[in-house]
Amino acid sequence: MTWARHFVPLRDRQADWSMRCAMLRDAERFIYLSTFYLDYDDYGAELLDLLLAAQGRGVRVSLLIDRFGQRLGGTLMSPHQRAELERALDALSRAGGRVTHYHPPRWLQRRVGGGQHVKIQVSEAGNLILTSGNLTRTSFSHWREYAVAVSGAVVPDIMASWEKIGGVLDPGDSLHLAVLARETPGDIDMAYGFCNPNLHQGPAGPWLWQGTNALTDRMVAMVEAAEHELLISSFYFKPAPVLEAAILRAARRGVHVEVHHSHRQSLSATDLAWVAAAVRYPQLLEAGVRIHEHPSGEHSKICVVDRAWAAFGSYNFEEPAHDRLAEAMLVSRDARAVGPALSVFDELRAMSDRQEVTKETLAAWPGPLAKRIRRWGRFRWWL
Image (cartoon, rainbow, N blue to C red):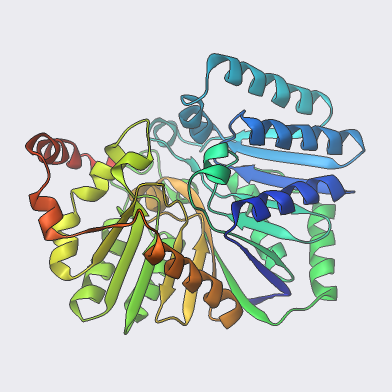
């Protein structure tokens, strides 16, 4: 366990964006920023302009983008947007900024979508943003996300994983953050959980991989500790088998398990991620899990145990988070961190578009939809 000096929840998307932009404008020495993908829309264009301006005034800028995530997200952009994004990234590189596209070391890992899914931003001021969202209009103007800003000793802990997701961390910057953390001790207990499974696999990558993911193990431990209530939000709820088994055990022993994730209509490009979740609805409902879908899109990644223990960050409850993607979560028992996470679920229950899934819901599925779920659900691991 380590400590945070300040903790600011950023459920409001514009509060997140304003803090992020202010950090870039105020930076004097360095900026480190990672994302799964960057869209060249009004948000992405403004961010790249701010990074270029920072680099121009002597700030060392490091931008880390996942190669697979960018290729996946790039399919949603027009050819003109993709060209403009390349132009902007090239301009940042030519100005001296470090632009890195991460891809895992092994061929098969790259073929099945291995990468890094950690979304952080930090400057020399020592404030760090960890978020569930990507740098896109969708994340700031459409889907619901959850981000937090922290300072204190937890910041060097988080940045210690920077090179494990493909970045280069300047030793002087690392030392600066460590000294700053020692000079500003905090009292908010805050543990950092991280794993990049691509670093622990052999030539076959995730294929039939039976290794241990330290972050998945931490999430399983939280679920196993639940006595009364387990609240989960995720983009689409399709956890790795070991985590799903723990959740089913919790529900069967009488724990109130409540899951909030996105509706079939939330992702316009395809419904296959929802299909991969829906194929397990019968088993989850039979165990007593309460499932709620949100058509406007729920993209936060939060787990709260017994209203006393919370985790939040980038880890979706899905198999890629276990065996293909580097992920990060902050974990805390401090009421100042748990309370805001609990309030997210209060908001979700109050959403007018929330739809609870029941056995009657499944029985009312049209025949073609039920057939589609049976057909494609068998490929859940890939989806």
